[in-house]
Length: 264
Ligand code: KIV
Ligand code: NA
Image (tube, rainbow, N blue to C red; front, side, top):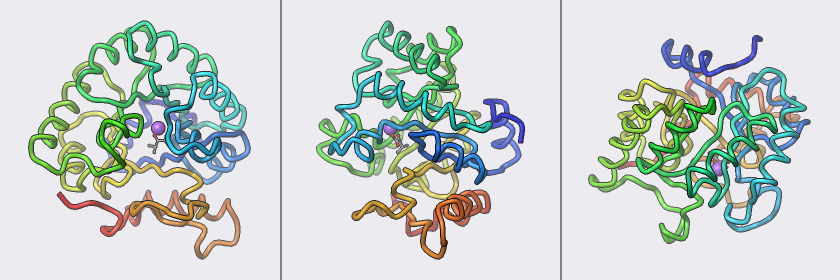
């Protein structure tokens, strides 16, 4: 398989072929995910939860993200590596540029930021400096204290409209990709249709251009999984088979099922 680039992902969207993304934090799982056909390895700041044992992503540092990005890079076999900018790493333009440079030098091909339309200038400056950006909308876990908990976002019409407008403004500003977490499936479908750039979903229904899950969740290691998680170890005898089952289920739009999504 040739290396996955932004052009590859745009082609997949245009052809209506689903994009398979999965979180990855180390070389061994990165290689196994590539062998299973995962196209985008997300070095997520969810590593604060699943690797470090914190109860949120807020304690994760840029150095933590750079370390795990470098680990994933060594195991990567042709996937696109997307790395999260952690909490407070992009509060100013200067921080966004410096910290993104650190992650790109560690091996990322794209960085992800959580927010909304207020990130337009940041996204534009990153693109001008050679750094593609994915913007994470909806339930953005770095803002859990503002939300007052992990809740579905965009259920009321005013918030839904703000999300639609943010998606288009960010695309206009030069965002390479969008990621929607825990938003009503109908809203995610609408935003995906309206966007010219790939839209990946988690807890956002089957109609986004691709899907992502946290590795540990889809391997059945989370004792209290969210509603949008499927345990892909079920019925499989080993981890490589579970990873392949995930890829196939996403490619054939068999995951997520309606019960994994949220209503408006
Ligand atoms: O950090 C992460 O794993 C993420 C995904 C849940 C999208 O941002
Ligand atoms: Na994240």
